[in-house]
Image 1 (cartoon, helix red, strand yellow):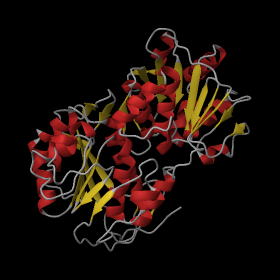
Image 2 (image 1 turned 45 degrees about the vertical axis):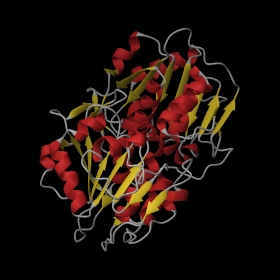
Image 3 (image 1 turned 90 degrees about the horizontal axis):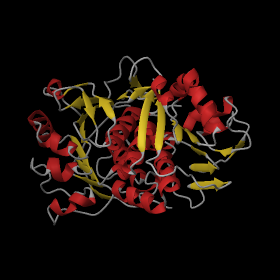
Image 4 (image 1 turned 120 degrees about the vertical axis):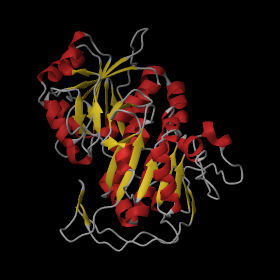
Length: 446
């Protein structure tokens, strides 16, 4: 599937990022950006941008990360913009490339920020998180890059704490409508602050939190590549307008009892695992105070995810055998699921999990692993549409999340936030899920 990259809108953004893309994100306020032009033609595949020999280079994007960066925001931005066709550089503001994000996920940057000093970027996009936003603020190289970006009227953006903690001290919010995470909103200049899920104001795009990152990233994609590309990416991410009947379906309801301890959750990962799914589940479950263990089925702890994000696991899968886990969740990603399916240790763990009546689940394409092991018998489930066609069990089309007894499944990608919050609700109660959702700035329907 391919599409044409269209010129960037010169005066207003289309309704894509404000309505069709805003699944559970109902409003956005847009101030017309300055006149910009883009005349290149190229094609976009469902992987990375494939340019013809004579096509101009893809748009260049800088995403800086530091200790305490919000991992959902960073990874969703990177994924969406790479899927749209951007050449995204992930740069560390720390002395080392490996960075521990706010929720404990270990990410590995592509380069050090110092190597980006002389680069010209079409977009600089700052993730939030604390102390991540402060680490970005204190990086002089990044300040100079971003200040130059603003001075030369190129696009820049910030989400969550970053507008208030990073851009405000740099003086880069002047005369622009802005928003940020509710916890930092009072720090913003009163006249220019707007409580909304998206603000686009004269080259600056801001948004309040992890739960609004899809809309934020798709708005940036639209500004870089045009409405057509943004709409295509939204469809590939399985984003859709809300439907009261589409969020969660539960069958054969049982209590998920884990005694009196923090639930132990095992998330196996491999080269090609879908980074959005891995990071979102890890971040949300850790916010809820679950004990989340990320285990690599590869020979090394570091894996290269489906869109090029490098993630470092906590342990190798062989070390996950030492104790039982209350919940095992398989992330998707076509190549990743194939590699997970080849792990003998993981197969053994899944079989034991099912036999013991403990909880297990799959996201996106990894449902095929459970199907192959016979763990879907008499179970209702959902998955990525491309996988449902191949599974003969009682597939539930259209639901973002399906729970059947001790099994939980999800379509994947943009639906994984609902998936993770559904787990929180089952393990800890609806009150905890609503509290976590509030911190994410995500409208939880539960």
